[in-house]
Amino acid sequence: MAAMFIFGFLVLPVSAEDNKDSSETVIQKLDYEGFLELAKKRRSIRKFKPDPISDEHIEKIIEAARWAPSGFNSQLWEFVVVRKPALKERIAEIISVEFRKMMQRSAPEGATPPSPKSAGPLMGLSKAPAYILLLGDTRVRKYGPPFMLTDEHKWLSTYLTSLAISYQYMALASTSLGLGSQWVSAVNLPTVPEQIREMLGIPEEMVFFDMFVVGYPDEEPAEKKMRPLEEMLHYDDCGTEDFRTEEQVKAFFGRE
Ligand SMILES: Cc1cc2nc3c(=O)[nH]c(=O)nc-3n(C[C@H](O)[C@H](O)[C@H](O)COP(=O)(O)O)c2cc1C
Image 1: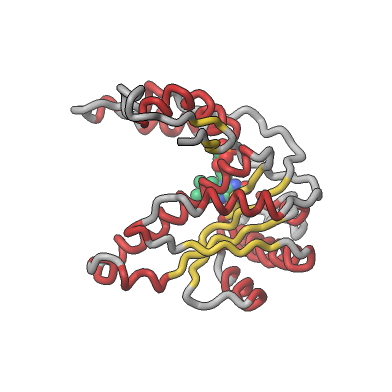
Image 2: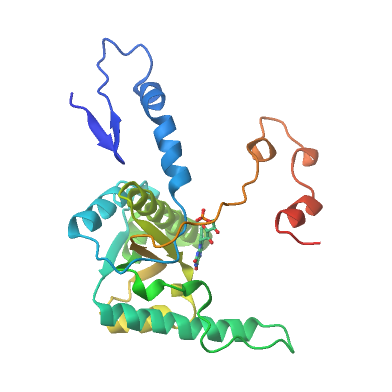
């Protein structure tokens, strides 16, 4: 059995003879620290260098994503990689326009409306060398267990979760390649999927998951506020007192 690399970490072969532990335990011993390092290293990047990323890198990112688990192994994902500057600019513009409209709609009465130039969390987006539109093929639905057709909530949670996992594999793979990524949920603002669909010729059956923006980071993200492990880890029987109070939740967000 040959050694393999998973996200750049060496995983040694496990033979039946020398394997008193399960192969899972052996991988954990060899690899957990490396995996944790990768998980910590993945951060949201919102400022990118314009340098292009190679086809090889793109393929490595998608190769990792296609190994994600999916509801009834539907592998419903499709990845549209947008690299042409004019198309990226148009997508960024569509999103910015709809984002500003959404900010205006949701602004409290009497508040100063956001300036037309403010693109909010989309700053730096158009400079990134690639946008990956992650799509879910809804035609798989009828081939799943019967409740996929009768239970709308179950179907929604199945396809959204499957796509979210594959999305996260893309993020981890990108980090392992020295790339950064930004999660852009604004691609699902009203009318945005339709506008992009029309521009790129994406069929109706494909639902949009959030957009993955990838490139070489041009910023070092600030340290992240983290909840402690002890606060969120619960074993067996637990009651209300084991969980945060409403005040603690509020305090986490810095609210009075
Ligand atoms: C469901 C979801 C939606 C998100 N949407 C956006 C987004 O539209 N724009 C953005 O810049 N970041 C977005 N993020 C990134 C989060 O803001 C970010 O993960 C969080 O602040 C923690 O920072 P980190 O990713 O650096 O660990 C999103 C993340 C998730 C999981």
